[in-house]
Structure formats: structure tokens, C-alpha cells
Image (cartoon, rainbow, N blue to C red; front, side, top):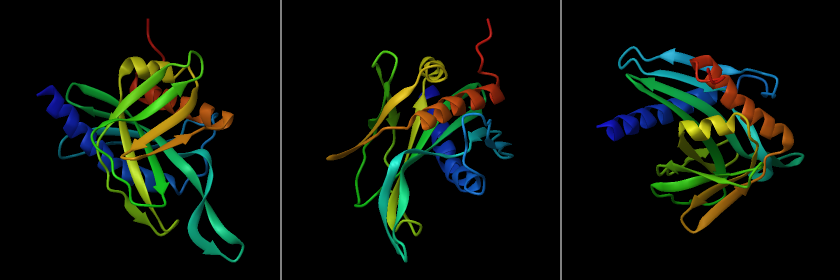
Length: 205
């Protein structure tokens, strides 16, 4: 029953993440000094509370399929967002990633998102569900959503350590994203910020 509840909570947060992502596009880029919360709301039907940071770019830029007078339009390799979902007695942190892809790719249920930590070279794996992607007119590419449930022990490590590399795995295809030092700080601060809003951070003795 608990697994079903977590799955339902994850699905609801995935749906909400699209709303949160588009809402955050109207805001300026997040920096490490910001505590940028774009959503903190309770669903009137099922009392699900959702808290989300603003979205932020990760990695370098890639050439999109949109041509302008100045040449091809550039797009971030990936965009990230940290989210929190609370329903009944379940409190869950999520890392949401959106990646544009040139071709249609497939994912299966599995440990498709992995983070390489800088301090000790440890690898944290996250379980995600399949996504068929949606076509974006901004890039003329398919954008894929990867929403990973973050265990609490991993969450606290992500509030203090630095993510050196992000790996996203598809069937017969994988992407490796290297955040810049500034992006690493923004990602770490997003985990702290969402945790602070919901009382998970800092850790109370």
C-alpha cells in the first residue's frame, strides 16, 4: 500500500512539475544566492501539498532545430527543478530534469538518472518512470521529463556535497551533463531552499 501511495504521489508531482516549470519561465534565472520558490500550494481535492523551486539550466548549450537570422538557436542541455510532495504521512523530495533530444528515444522503469558526487566519487542512482517526450516549438525537438524520487539520506548529501556529473540513460542512448561551478551551487541551494520551506533543512538536532 505504501508503494502505491508513493507511486500516486510521484505521478501527481510529475504532472504538477509541468505547471511549475512553465510558471518559472516567467522569472529571472535563479542564482545560488536566491531562495526561489515558484509553487507552494495544496490541492483542494486530495490535500496534496506541492513545493517547487524555480527551474535552472544545467550543462552547456546545444544547437536546437530552430533557425534564426543570426543562425541556429541555442538551448540548454538540460533544465532542473527540485520539488517536494506531501500527502497524508508521506513526504517526498524529487529531482526533476528536462532534456531536449534530436531523435525519439525510449525509457523504461529503472535507475535511469545517476549523479556522480564530487567529494568522494560516489554514485547516487534514482528510479524514474518512462516518458515519451513532448514536442517543443521553442527548439523543434522532443523534450523528455525525468522525475526522480530522492531518498532522504541522499537528499541531505545533496544539500552539502557537489554534483560533478549527471547521467541520464535511455534505451540504447545516454546523456552525460557536466554542470558548471555556478550551476552546481544553484542545484545545491535549490535542495536547501525547498527543504527549508517544508522544515526538512537544516537538520535539527
